[in-house]
Image (cartoon, rainbow, N blue to C red; front, side, top):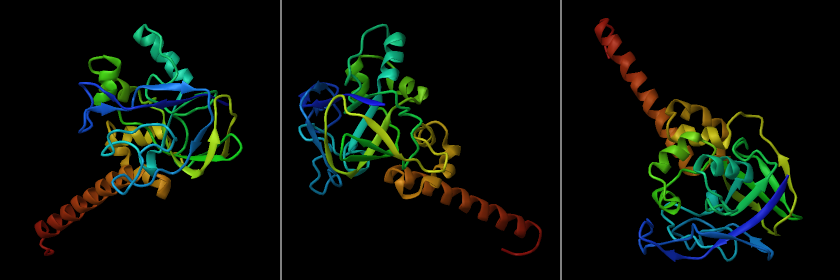
Length: 241
């Protein structure tokens, strides 16, 4: 398992950017230089957005922060989309910070930890929810739905231990939880397969905070409906409320 490239982006103004200032950092290019990776903090509280030094996150309402400090995507999945779209896709083409080889990124369990290089440790939090900026970047109509339905959307990661990385570094899985919640499953749960929401709570605090909130609210709503149903049955049966 190897880190093929580390990809950084600078702000670029485009008409399809969803950031308030009309810029995006999705245009990422590989760098040969070592890159420092740290926890960027919470969006809206002085956070820099990206966990990678020299990388831009322009819309802090939707991107960046501790729960998605780093975005990883597999070269194998880029190869799949090259065939599907009929055109070459360079490393970083999907706006990923890390392009990997030999690692099941989509099948990474939430809470799974990777060591990259000598010091950096990252923890998987969820899969990527696509956006209109990504669709505009590729110029593919219906891309948001198509990419999400395929559910091989890469992994967002938080920084557990900071460190410096560069292209060619080995990747080692140093911890893998015993639950079955993968990044792909978490993504499916918050998009097209809402019945999975109760199951992804098994990942606990490692789950991306927004996905966890959505799942908890879903479970609370289901429980409330069940209480109301039972209450109505008692009334009908003459047992009182």
